[in-house]
Image 1 (spheres, rainbow, N blue to C red):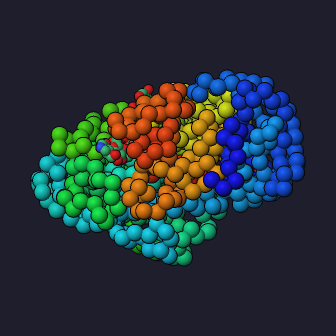
Image 2: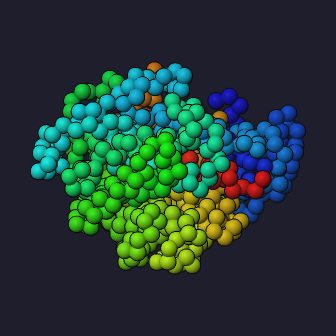
Image 3: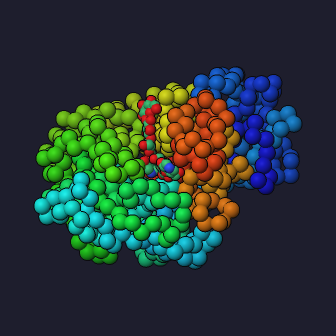
Length: 551
Ligand code: G3I
Ligand code: 9MR
């Protein structure tokens, strides 16, 4: 790509805010001791000594670190080591504006049942797909009120990922994370990003979340409060544009406890974030809270319904047998929404460990909501406990960020969707930073973002449309089928995954090492798919760093 430098020097190839912590990683094998930072004219603006060498297990490399945090002057720069220069990056006051806008706009690009017009979608305009106005109740989801084959309408929502199905579990954490970004950093979302609702007096991020919340509401069976696990084809669509996908029926499949609880948590959160907009959508906030409570009651009555794909369904499973964390998350959000002590007790009773969140591990989302609201909580959950638990997780993550690439990610964290693991680690570090202002937490969160933007063992910038070594071939059906060379912008690739669970026709990975198990090839869903739950922490971390980095 234009201006590409040496991939040997690993650096965030998008940029920094003036007061960001700024690091580059250099292989010890280069034999260098010093580094320079040069401006666009090649003039040296800063030089310094590289850190002592340190090994990073995930890529089995020994590396040294250039710390150029002292560079606070805005401009365009590269890091130089000997005769090598890095990819360019900027230092700018609004350094994450384009990235944050694109990461959020990616959700718009994955809207189902909507035509994307050139005005908002540019080169990636496309006809509407999957109207989902006539969806069948699958045998696994049949009830007295809605027997098998009942037709329901379940339109809107986002496609989950590179595929065109809609899964409640994964939708929950994704929607919540966007709502949390708005709730925590409202000032970042005052600008419009160019979606059809822009200018309607509501932050675009809330309009975008509503596109999915409207769909989620249809996934609840009004007769009993239970929530269908997913809306899906029986098998994955071919590699075609949404409007060209097969018109075989789509189904709502089996109710599950995880779906009910993730739905309850997300609806309770949405009811609170939407409350100030009651004049615009009268009654919606209340309706969401009632839906959340009905789903909670269903889950209490059906506490262990673990989802498994029925025999005739082979699409994404999002199955999860550990449900204590889902109970804890839903209880936390319902406690904040209602102040009712039974929810506080339910939260404490589950004693769900605070770990980095993921689609199947959501307790942290409850902890972070409690932390944000801790000044206003009714007695029931000990405020000091919340602060202590969050700090304990952050301090463990920050310790990991001490050596090697200086990131919180460890070998064991490099699984399917690892780029979101590190961003969710960043999100948790930021919760602790918001509580106690420990600088190392903000720095490690910055490092999480730097990692996906280029300071990683592959040297790729993992967000489509950004950096001089960008991901070009994500496993994303619209990007693969639209005939446009550039992929749909703003998407985070799943990233390195030593599981390498791709189809057999995929070319071999360059390495078995966890951090190098990556392929920029559209065949690779195990390392190069995109997904709403991976983009959501990109939105969150980008917004948080914009708001929290000292100005
Ligand atoms: O967490 C375990 C870890 O403890 C273990 O050491 C490691 C060893 O393999 O596995 C880890 O689990 C992996 C898990 O992802 C981590 O989240 C599983 O092996 C892996 O199979 C699982 O992959 C999931 C994948 O679907 C396959 O089911 C991903 O989480 C999930 O993000 C992905 O989601 C898909 C949807 O099904 C369909 N739509 C696209 C979407 C993204 O690819
Ligand atoms: O495109 C599908 C992707 O979204 C999933 O994450 C992945 C794993 O479940 O499966 C992909 O679909 C492939 C299917 O599993 C096997 N045949 C080829 C499909 C498209 O590459």
